[in-house]
Length: 138
Image (tube, rainbow, N blue to C red; front, side, top):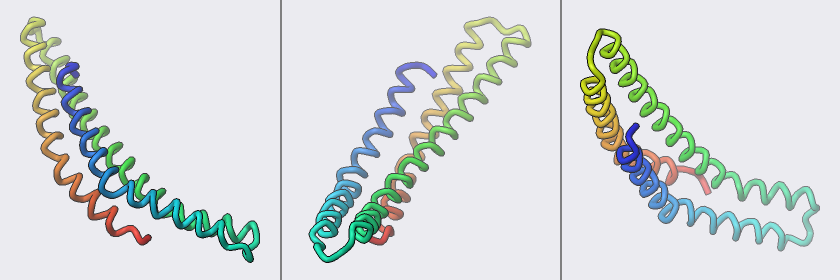
């Protein structure tokens, strides 16, 4: 993938993650830390009860982080498959006797299409992630 195209995808994905972190994950982190501190204030509980309490406090955030990571991995896998298809098309064209400039042009157009298509998926992915994050019991 060309560097400029790769940078477009990376910037858009980072902006999405930063928005999710700022508007959802950060609030969950605050709840997790307050909950964990409350667990530590329970002086009559045993050490194992306090650890279990803290683990329960961490569960929602761990689920949230897993959701975001999983979606980003699926997104990256789909983008990789699309660009691999472009590579195959370029190799087939080259093997059929096409010159390098034609192959390079095909590759740039194809990868550009992959980038545009996947960037258009980010809003729905963001919406789905927000809904899933909001549905995690606290």
